[in-house]
Every structure is written in structure tokens, then in C-alpha cells.
Image 1 (cartoon, rainbow, N blue to C red):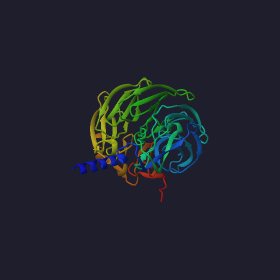
Image 2 (spheres, one colour; image 1 turned 120 degrees about the vertical axis):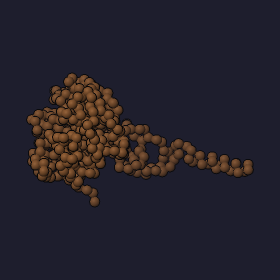
Image 3 (cartoon, rainbow, N blue to C red; image 1 turned 180 degrees about the vertical axis):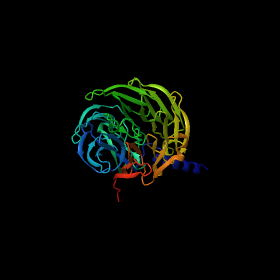
Image 4 (cartoon, one colour; image 1 turned 120 degrees about the horizontal axis):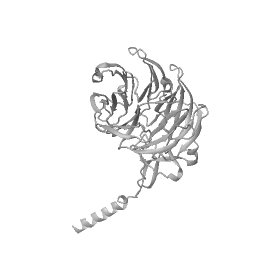
Length: 421
């Protein structure tokens, strides 16, 4: 018996010698950080020749142009003076870019941790006008695999990507950084083409929004940065607002901001644009949710699955005739909803893998019964209605539809992403 115990003890100690040490040396596959030096990062904003779209992100409309974000790389500039023949004219390189907003030819864009102000008076030769350092949380770009992340060394610069490699070393848990999730973003409501103003129009998934002379940017999932942009040449950081947790999108209507959050919708009064005041909130189950608003109703898509929360996806119609007490009017089942848009009595819903769905929303209690059309050949992410022309962004590319005859909606044009063979 003693011999058995002694043998077992020796065996256990041997196993621990190789496996109980947290820093044991072994070989594994890793995502090794790819860096851009801090100096190069601070000087990376520039005009480049047109390039093909590879991975689409947010969309923005300004004048005769459509801006399409190339995730974490920059913005495609598309001349859309003829929606039936859009032309990619050039590209603005902005490392780490996801969101954008434009007023008076000044482009406001995130660049990893920084907010950059870019003069786009000459679309062919843009210039950086100002930079606000470290106003956004440092988030790492995503990967397309489940391998471990290598240790990030901030002294080497900004992480702009990953290289998959095999390594043999003492494994230590790397320092935690949040991974950027580009699928959580909302909308500004002004259209420079539709109403003659000098402010652009975003899709419903944006986190940047301009209202009047104020720029609002979601710094994180719980904080808002506020900028005075009344002087084109001197944007000024004018304050911050602490919101609830899980804020994803922002929409402006009249003198109010409507924040879409993963647990509800928050309403703030911006009569004083630099000091938003809480008005009320509408709560729902845990989900991902952009929101758009007209005078009487808020339309919210709730997407379930993955990290979004529950197993139910739906469209909520919320009565906001009294902003102090928003109340659910009715819910409609959806499959995989993302962005949405409204134009008069029309409601456009990006139902992901279920396609682009169009409804007559004039009777909010009968929206499902007033279904107009569904396009299943696209997996839409977000939309911008532009007075009879619907701009749609999707993993397939940029598509535009003519809906002047709602009973005969026609595809006007498309700029497709070429699939890799």
C-alpha cells in the first residue's frame, strides 16, 4: 500500500511539474498584433485613389455623395449625382474608422482612439483640420478566428490587425482590451439633398449625429461626447454625458435625442444642446436595437442571438405622443433585424438574412398586414431613404432602389463586393 501511495505521489508531482505551472512552455496558434507606429497613425489621414469595396460598414449621405465606410480602413467617396450610375471617385484613408458625420464640408470621423476633423471641400485632396486625442476607448480590431490574442505592447503603436502564427513560449494571459463591435450603431435626421441644409444624413446604425451646431458622438456604451461645431475651423469639446449601460445608437428628432440601448430606449431633451436632460425611457428585453422616430411613434428593431441577448427578434412600435411616458403599442415578429428607415408612411426594415422588407406604417396596429414588398436577394445592414431613392448597405455591397412607384420598386444600381474565389 505504501508503495502505491509513494508511486502515485511521484506521478502527481511529475504531472504538476509540467502542467500545474501557469507559465508552462508550450506551442500554440496565436493572433500576433500588427502595429502602426504612433507617428504614422497621427499622419495617416489622406486622399487616395479609388479602390474596390471589400468589407462595408456604415453609410452616410452628403450632397451628391454617398460615403461608405471600409471597416477600420477609411471611407469610399461615391459620386451619386446619378443614382442609376454611382461612381467611386476616391478613398479617404482613416485607420480605425467606423463612424462619420458631416457639416459644412467638415468630416468628423473616429480613428481608433481619436476624433479627426477633415476638410473635404476638395474631395480629391482632403486635409486634416483638427484632431482630438484619446476621446474614444482603445478597442482592438476583430479577428475571424478563435485563436488566442498575443500580448499588446502600446509602446509599439496602434494595433491595426492580426497575423496568425504558431508560437512556443511561456503562456501568460494577455492584457484585456475590448474588441470593437461595428454592429452596434444610429442616425442623424437631416438630408443635405432633401431639404437644402448643409448637414448630411446617416443610416440608423450610426453612433455619430449632428443636430444644428452640435456634434454628438458615443464615446462608449455608456458615455456621450458633445462638441460645438458652430465654427467650421475650430470644433470645441463642450462636455460629456453619462448614460445608462449598453448604449448602441442615437437618433435626433426635433429637440430630442433617442438612444437605442440593449435594454431599452432613452429619451433626452436637447433644448440646450450642450446639456441634454433625461426625459424618460422605454424598457425591453436584452437585445441589439437601433431606433428611428417620427412625430408620434418610435420604431425599434430588437435583434436576438449571439451576445445580443434573448432568442426573440422583433419590431417594436412605441407610442411617444407623450415623451414622458413612452409605451409599447405593438410588436411584430422579425427574423434577424438590423437597421431601419422611414419616409412618410413608408417603413424600411433591414431584416438581415430574411431580406429588405418594406411596409406601409400609416396604421401602426396593422403594419404586418400592410406589407408592401420583400427583397430576399440582399442581406441588408442599414438604409437611408432619400426622397424616392433608397440607399442600402449590405455585405453584398451598395444598392439603390427607386420607390417612387411603391407598387413597382426597381433596383436602380449596385456596386457589388467581388467575392473571393
